[in-house]
Image 1 (cartoon, rainbow, N blue to C red):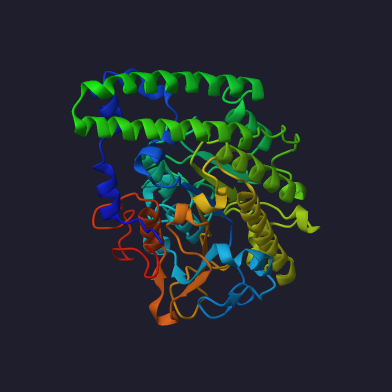
Image 2: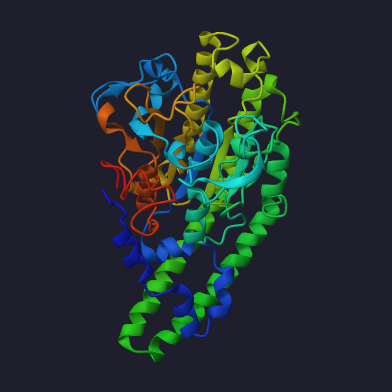
Length: 462
C-alpha cells in the first residue's frame, strides 16, 4: 500500500512543474483554465481530500472503547455501536491526550479547543474571561494555523473554495467555539445555516446542470486547443521533450475522461430546508443538512478541505433529547442525567456513521468513492465533560478516530492502543496526518507551537 512521507512529498515537488512546462511551450496562459484534476493525472497519484469533524465534551470511555484486538475488534459499547458497520473504514486511536492543557493560558475548554487541530496555545491578555471569571487575566484567540488551513495552503488546489467550514448549533463568539485558524489570532467563523452554506458554496459556481455543461464544454475546448498545439510541437523538439509532450497529452486525455465522468457524478443538491440554525430541537436535522452540503461540495470538487463542527465547548442546549437543558452543565452531570449525556454521545456517533456512509456511497470521477479518497478525522477537545485532558492514568484517554483511506495512504480497519503509562500527544496525530496527505510537517517534524508532545508522527501511522 502506498504511503506518503515527507521524503515522498519532497520528491513529488521536484516533478517538472506543470506551469513551467506549459510556459516553455508558450501555453502558460492556458494553465488557469485547465481544471485541477490534471495535476493528479500528471503526477499519477490519487486524489486526496481532508475533512475534520468535531463533537464536544469527549465521551463516556467505557461505553465508547472498542473490544477485541487491534485488527479484530468490535464497537460493543452502547455509545460507539453505531460505528460497527463502518469499522473496516476507521482507525481508532486509543490512548491520546490533548496537548492544549500544557499550552499555557486559558481554561480547559478554551485551550483544548484552540489546540485540537493546531497544537497551538492561546494568546495572553485577550478579551475573553477564563472560566467566566472577570477577575482573572483574559485570553485571546489561538496562536497557530490549524491543520485544515495548513494542508489547503500546501495543496493550493484551484477549487472554487479554499476550504469549507460548517457548524451546527452554536451562538457564542469566543475561543470555546472556534477550532479552525488561518493563522495567529485568525479564527475562521464556520457557517451555521445549511441554506446559507449551500447558497454560498454552489451559487455562481455550478448554477444548474446547463451552466455546468457549458463550463465543461469550455474547459474541453481549451483542452482540445492545448492538445492540438502540443501535438504540432512534437516533430519540432528533441526526443526528450517529445516524451514530455506525450506524457502531457496522456494527461489531457485523462482530464477529458474525468470531466465526462464529473458531469454524471456531480449533482447539485436541492436547497436545504429553511431552519433556525440555533434551534437545538432540530440539532439532528441541521447536522444532516450540513453533512449533505459538505458531501456535495466535495463531490463537485468545489473544495478539497472541509470541517463539520457539532456544537462547541460552550455547549448550548439539548432540545433534541427531549429536555432543553444546559448542555455544558449536563456534561458535568450537574443537571439532567448520565443517560441523557450518553444519548447525546451516541447521537454524535450516529451522525458520524451517516457521514461515512454518504462518503462511501458517493462515486468520484476517478472511479472510486469519496470515502476512499478522503482522510476524515474526528476529534474532541476534552476526554469527557469533566475537563479531562486524557494525559494521566487517573483519567480516561482522549477519543479520536480517523476514517477513509486518503487515496490509499491510510490502512483502516484497526485500533491503535497505547498503554495508560504511555499516553501519546494528539499533536503526533496531526504530524501523521500531514504525512498521510503528502504535506511536509512543520520544522523538526512537528506541528504547532506546543512542544510537550515531542516530534514525529504517531507510532503505527504513516
